Length: 273
Image (cartoon, rainbow, N blue to C red):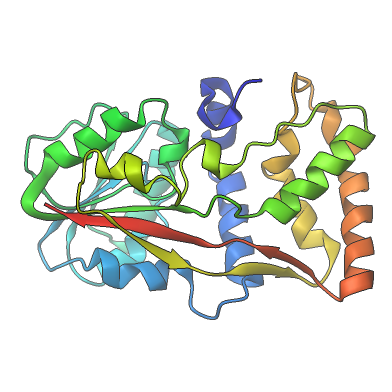
């Protein structure tokens, strides 16, 4: 079975624009158990300094950039998707953020050796086919006194939601793909990171979704997990079959438990060279 996390066609579908990613960000902001957001939790680890060069590899829609800009660094944003970079540049112009964007792949960063004070690869390495090559590139562009920050999810992050998907997909006659983060890049991959950054440490942020009604869980599900089936129909017809089943199952859980709680712990690897 193929893994959609690294499938070029599926990644183009997911990240051609920011709509699906933005919905997931909003869901985290509105329905997380922790009062402190993950970005706020991570910022002291990034520790951006005034004038420092911060490289954001796989920047997505630039969620970190407004927070980083408060510390007056220089930000270089890199992504493989031009759609994401268009959103990043628009945000930078609207908010006057010190961001320069470039289209490139993590395995071949368009920067000179030892150019960066901070290198971030946040929630993106599970989309990279050659993770060691990407890690080596991050080390190459990092200054000897620099720091790398690699945010990702716990191996079982969101698994309760995925378990509902596995159940209803089989009910509907599909073969679901159980794409656990541990099969891509999760907090269990410390040994991999230490192949390139021997002193890397793992830091964990415990959190969960709290869905009081099925609707926000359904929207989050429809933004990505719903597509985790083998031989996914090109016309998207699986969506009309799966969404009512998902909504019904989540409603049953809420009626029984009062809320649909989905653990979603995450964290980061951090290293200095």
